[in-house]
Length: 64
Length: 399
Image 1: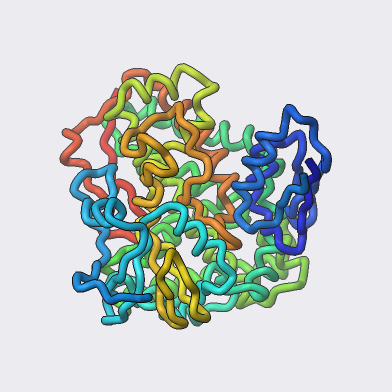
Image 2: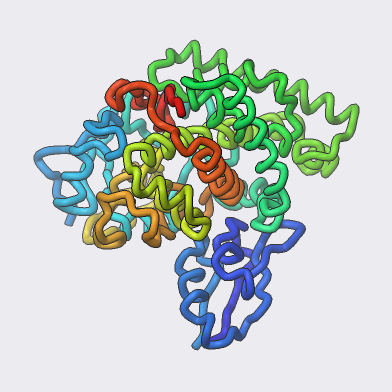
């Protein structure tokens, strides 16, 4: 699993950082997504998929 | 493809039971997720009651939120929209890329981490209110003693608005959000609040301050009118919403003692309970609304350019296809993905602040007063069917 984040689309709602703080953070400047772990371990896959689904702006996607 | 249904839906905010959406809207969802709807100005638009469809409209780039394109689902709504249209900086009603410019200036201030840093201060404010309630003794109105002061104090400190001026902005926002207000009353309230914020911005230009509005002034990206519009939006959205969730949520818990006990006794339940209360109560009971910028096909229907779509978030949040046993309040369920903060690029900027406030305030209240109970029969609690944001006008409680 590879996480792709489009910071141009991100609206900084924080759903990803709230859901999986080990994988996602937010920039101090504009609150947009910062991916801490672009290739997360299998144990976090389900949580990452849920975070991608929750993202309001469609900024996150997953490449298998 | 589009067939005019003989019986056009009309929108309503009047509920038969305090915690459930209007039955007519629930029945509509049980039939189909999308309906033709007649608007207050005779516009023939649409009503969305299904969760999946609601989400796709809110995420769709060809649906606009601009006020001049909207039609009012109920009569009173028109006045607000006409007035707000004129104000620079009111970015809730802008489309990208204009919206993006404002949102980007603010998102850094509302991150999950920033809100975590506010936790000790929010806890302190909450304890002060509980101390004051204890000193006063019951019965008290929980809205005035607890639910309204906490988010008001927090947003005032965050923005850099003197809390001493609260009577003025509480009064103005109450008039703005009251569906019975006349156009003249709404105009006067908006003017008064904007004049207040214009003066505050001027003051911050002269004397720099270390708060959100002060930072925006110093940043130099926005002019004074835009700053006043941003300030109005954040100030009103920042206290009215959480205040109503705190009071209505407490009312709901008081009538569901098992759920209340879980929130009071089990710290692990609180996070999920806040999501569930947000879903179950959906205090945003008008809209959100969007206008199609071009013909868009939805679920086999063509929404024509210029047609307005009103999403009944309260019934979409009760869609059993998404939430299963959706009609019961169950603080142990996973209610994530509810639409109470919206969805798409306009999803609530302050949602992490609201969550933080609720996660602290509900359990603190229930632990301080384990015997908390209504001081009037439940039927006598006055509900806010007449306001843009649902909740209770007063909640008399004792302990």
